[in-house]
Image (cartoon, rainbow, N blue to C red; front, side):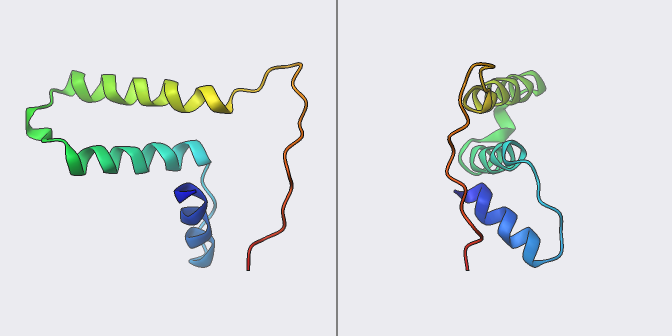
Length: 78
């Protein structure tokens, strides 16, 4: 939901839309930075966190080759 709001805001400012996965990752990293004392993290800790987050984000977006696309298509929200 936050990613869609971000994309709407970007469109309102004349910017291009970003992939939802990228926005989710950015929002998740902002939340981590706000709540975790980053002075105690090593570079390897940060890399591991990003790697795990990317794997977790990709899983819901993977589509099986035999899956049926039955998503609801909605018009723009006004």
